[in-house]
Image (cartoon, rainbow over all chains, first blue to last red):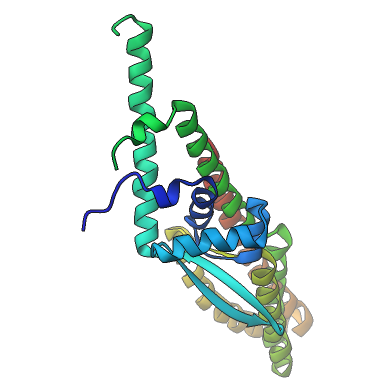
Length: 108
Length: 153
């Protein structure tokens, strides 16, 4: 199945940030993601769940020092979708700039 | 997936790309070990060699436990693990470090008659500690370059 380039699941600001944060990492703790995104637990959970349902993110629970800790990572599918989405954003930006240039020079 | 282009203003797209770079940089920054980490690992490796030369092998277990605790503390503190393999040069250096470890022990034990056990073991420990610390500085710089590259991309 051909993967869509512009991904509406990823493009929501918080989900885009989650994917961007996870992209250079193997995995990140839930608490770290919450701090970086400056959102509440419930908001982060909701977005992670949506990414998980799309098959883009996987969660892992681990008990460390008697405390339950949750880690999230991008799946291969999620990584590919994110890369495609970024490429599409870059392409959109370039085409917008070209259109702007043509407008400024009086071609439109 | 039609009509996205109409819905996305150039400013929005630029904003999204900027936000992506910012988050990638934040992730890499968080994954970077502090300066003390390389120094501690170097000291522990040096102590391991020094104790081997001095024939105090019964203390090895404490040193290994200490190293495991430092590694565990660091991984728990950052809360992230980076998806990055060491550079080719670092991988080669790591492979060289293992025979260097044993070579230093043999050389220091040979020289211990001339230098005395204390100086021979200390010298061997210092040589390995310097090698490990240099490697950690090199890896840290490489990581910083990567963080900088994400910023400037």
